[in-house]
Image 1 (cartoon, rainbow, N blue to C red):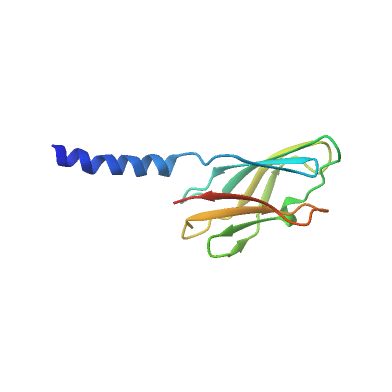
Image 2 (cartoon, rainbow, N blue to C red):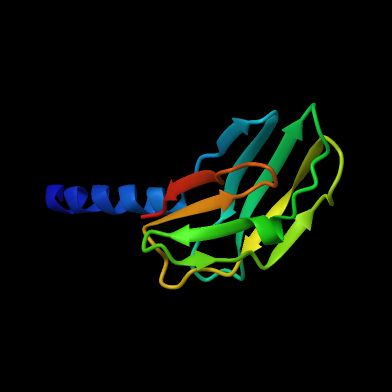
Length: 130
């Protein structure tokens, strides 16, 4: 019985990690805060979804995420978004879901890069998947 328990503990640990939520990340620069939360990056789904929230008090948010965002795997391969389901350009608060085709096979890590007009470097958000 003890041997079975010791075999069960690692299996439960990995099962819990596989279903665990990935932490939101924030980047604040040039008066604009961007918060990104992966909401669906599992295997066998139609799209990988990232909730993106922009906040500012200084300028209108006119970012086109279909042109300014890219998902990068640990090998450096880049994947463009396939859809933005959210608020259109303008205003001081925008949020929505940025969608990508799933990466197959599922990489060990991904990095979402968002390059905003007028900024010299992309904002980067990185998660370990495995």
